[in-house]
Image (tube, rainbow, N blue to C red; front, side, top):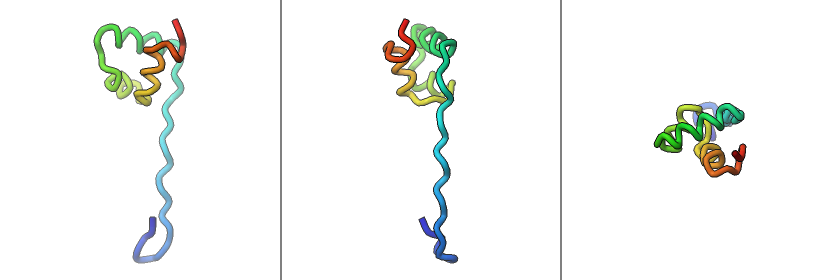
Length: 64
């Protein structure tokens, strides 16, 4: 990306990383999902990727 006036490169903002999912978070995520909360809503609540929620719900991360 270039700044047209000064002809210099403008850096892209750094990507924000999701916080790591802990065992306690995983247990609460499963509980919220069993109560009927949608995965994308759970992800928004914890500010994590929806894929992480899916991994927890399907037992790929922190299997029960």
